[in-house]
Amino acid sequence: MAHNDRSRNVTQGIARSPNRAMYYAMGYRDEDFTKPMIGVANSHSTITPCNSGLQRLVDAAVAEIANCECNSQVFGIPTVSDGIGMGTEGMKYSLVSREVIADAIETCVNGQWMDAALVVGGCDKNMPGAMIAIARCNVPAIFVYGGTVKPGHYKDKDLTIVSAFEAVGEFSAGRLAEVDFKEIERRCIPGSGSCGGMYTANTMSSSFEALGMSLPYSSTMANPDADKLQSAALSARTLVQAVERGLRPRDIITRASLENAVSLIMAVGGSTNAVLHYLAIAHAAQVAWTIDDFERIRARVPVLCDLKPSGRYVATDLHRAGGIPQVLKMLLANGQLHGECMTITGQTMAELLAQVPEQPRAGQDVIRPWDKPLYPQGHLAILRGNLAPEGCVAKITGLKNASMTGPARVFESEDEAMAAILGDRIHPGDIVVIRYEGPKGGPGMREMLAPTSAIVGKGLGESVGLITDGRFSGGTWGMVVGHVCPEAYVGGAIALIREGESISIDADRRLLQLHVSEQELAQRRALWSAPAPRYTRGVLAKFAKLVSSASQGAITDGDLSY
Image (cartoon, one colour):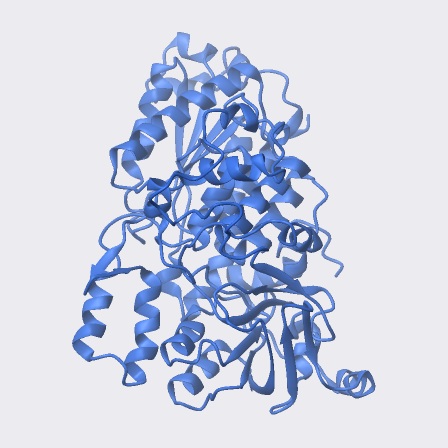
């Protein structure tokens, strides 16, 4: 029987099975074997503040499952901290962890034939990893976001994790005193919760509301607050009701609901990583979706929210201003949301938003009115050209100029580029090229928050471009282009660039172009050969062997003939 064709509860089989002995050992009674078995995937850990406050949410969900006369089966899922791994070799495990998380959830849910799944997650890859698994397993499921961190404060400024990375560049440029540098580092993260701007964690959790797989308002609550605890319990009750209705993820995750999620991402100014992750989620749900769909939606959806990294506010400010439901209602009222899409609540999106006003409330400027957006079109542009025939992703908000042409400054790794930036060897007008950091070449497609933040901290955010076959943190802003495909390791044109050659980044024309003839590039390609793999054993070697192009979502379970 296929996993998505389950026609009876696992408990109905267990009731007649000798496997009951294992359950008796855990305190089950005979009457428990007729109750639904609800898997609770718990990513609590003390590895990162994003996940250090999750256990009480799991406990609240487990208690509510018991109140609903169901059985919970709690199992652990791993996480790694992008903020801790950033700029180190450990960052190569970040994207890999998305696949590990998805595989772990699928293994437990299908291996134990659970009737439903509630996933509690915090750090960046928890969300897409969970949703990939939820779509694969296709049993009733809900995602419970651990919640955002509250902003830190120093000298009357709100701080986030990105403040610390940008402070490195400012300090090395002599623009920040050592005492201030240390205080920013100490104060930027005041407690538990995921990074506070519209970075990757908050982008993905917010989009899950739009997708219909999380409860309204749940993605902008702060982790320490009481409403986050209440939302976890309500999520558990909602999941039990979905089990009773037979409502499954692939009833919810459709092409229309993916459009809703991506429209929301554009409206809030979300992370470039969302492109990679929604390609993978669509693949898992078997929904037709390509990189060009992001560009199609970008052209028609404005940026409505003034949020970090390029804006002024953080997720808790957005929550006070009306949260994700307010943004969704504005999209719906202006014909940019599919109101008929089903949600995990059993209501359609339009029904769920019925009581939300069509206009943002007065007295706040976190959410702009529809007729006065921050930007008239979305911020995640898909560029193409001879450097990226499969496409690449540019984040174009917060810039005075959306195009530049300059000489290539070529580096074979993030570490080499970082040394040049901090060593004052990068100058206005340069275009930094960081290659062999793609899914296969890295391997693992590291995020480039350290170099991009150092560029901003040096005061070069508007005047220096950066292109890479790696990724960017959701905290990155500037003239940056990532996910360049094909990547260098498989012979993409980014591998053929020579120091000093002219490159154009033009978001208006959606172009990434190396000003070298096709004949010359063909000659270089004929002489090029792939470098030796950086890893030949372990999970990174396995990932490099299996992973697809970033233009396909860097998936590990698809057509690998690319």
